[in-house]
Image (cartoon, rainbow, N blue to C red; front, side, top):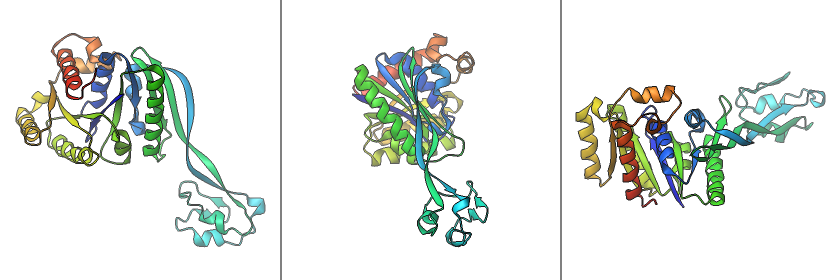
Length: 287
């Protein structure tokens, strides 16, 4: 089964917009939104939620005050200054559990922490696995792994040809969890100094994990000189440029209408995205 992840070194390059359009062209696919810190693919796909599962990660530390003798040992050992004589400040506590281990009265308890939810949904493009972290919560890399496993299980159940993954921006743990063992990665970049810099950083990560890559230059005509630099860099490093999408305000109009670009209009933008998909299928041998 093919797994194509769409990623970008930085936010705002149009990665999710491209992913949604490819989803409308892919046919027999399962979709996964692994940008769990700022999930927004559901806005365009408008899914119907079938199942919701809690995402449990880490621990919540609580103090049973009736059992507490007030010895102050937990206060002295907590390097985060989360403990007071009257309780525990949850915003300072890191959940390390040292206080629970050394408490002579067993007054401190460690409880599982619900950090968010992940969902199995249905869309007109196929089954959709997505998630949402509670504000300020961590372990997004672990949640990405959870979403990918659920997507693989769903794809096997549905006999899907491909899993399309909307990856997170950046090069951190969520990205690594998104790209590992993927068939290929489509890097959506833009012809800006920041876009080129972060594209090169993310290419270093994909090379480390031996994930084949292709580049899509979005809004290429806002700076043709930088676009030429991207193409020259890609040629020097034997990285195929699978598509160049020009800037057009119809993309903004399609987002406002909550539709993918290829559904909203049949102009040069949608034609370029269709060409992009054909190139991707050829590069990564997708049926």
